[in-house]
Image (tube, rainbow, N blue to C red; front, side):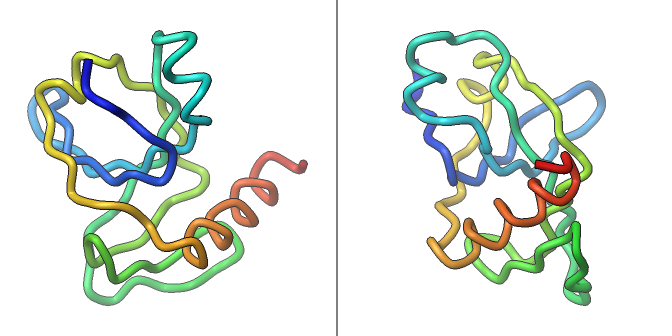
Length: 105
């Protein structure tokens, strides 16, 4: 199985098109319970706005992490997908704040 880790950005195939996603789920949980992998969708765009629930990123892709767009993807999607890179610690911290706001945690 592909080594899928929290903070990694992937392009995964879905029905009809590819999606760019950020793995949100804890890496240990992914290894111990390989069911659906919890991710946030990334919209690739040059003019991403920074709001309470969106986080613009420049690397490994240019776009915006959409904290309200939480989805689970089967591990097979990642086997057929492409690892693009990893979010920086600072960007991941901003994503965590946005997710906490969305989920009222």
